Length: 217
Image 1 (tube, rainbow, N blue to C red):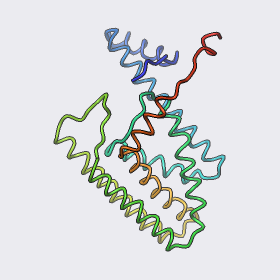
Image 2: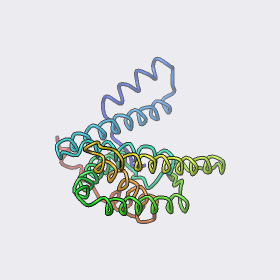
Image 3: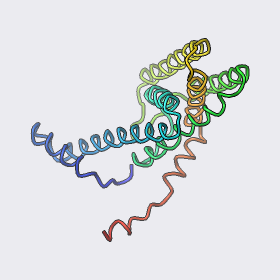
Image 4: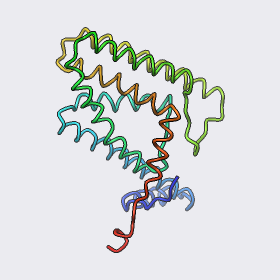
C-alpha cells in the first residue's frame, strides 16, 4: 500500500472517534485509512453513476457496479496499491462497459445469447481455477474461508445466470442492455482473476504521478 496523504475530513472523523472511544494513536491511523477508503469508494460510485447518466447508460452502469460488488467480496481479484487508482478504474471502466453493452444490445437475440453464454462460461472457468484471489496485504490463510468464498462466487454466478434468463423474457426496455452489462462485467471480473489483470493493475500502480505542482500550492 502506497503512503497516502489523507483527506482533512478523514483525519477529523478519525480524531473525533478516537477521542470518544479512547483509541491509541496507531489505531487512529488505521481508522483514518478505513474512513478514507469508505469516502473514496462512495465518491467513486457517485462519479461512476454520474458518468453513466451523462453517457445515457445509467441502468447498465448500476448493473456493472452491483455485479462487481458481489464478485469482489467473494471471488476477489487484482488490486491496486492505491484506493485512488482503484477508484479511477471503477469510474472509467464500468460506464464504458455499460456503453459497450448499449451498442451490443442492438444485435439480434441469438448474438446476445452467444455473448452472454461465452462471458458466463469464462467466468465459471476462472472462478473454478483462481477464486478467491486475495490481496497480498491481507492474504486468505484459512482453507475453510477460501472454500466458502469460492462457493459464494459460484452462488453469485448462478444467481446472475437466473437474472439473465429472467431478463431475456422481460419486456423491460433496458433488459437487453442490462443483461449484456451483467455478462460483460463477468468478463471483466474474469480478467481481474487472471494474471493479465494483475499485470494491468501493476502497470497502473507503476504510473508515476508528479506531486511537485501540488506541493508548490
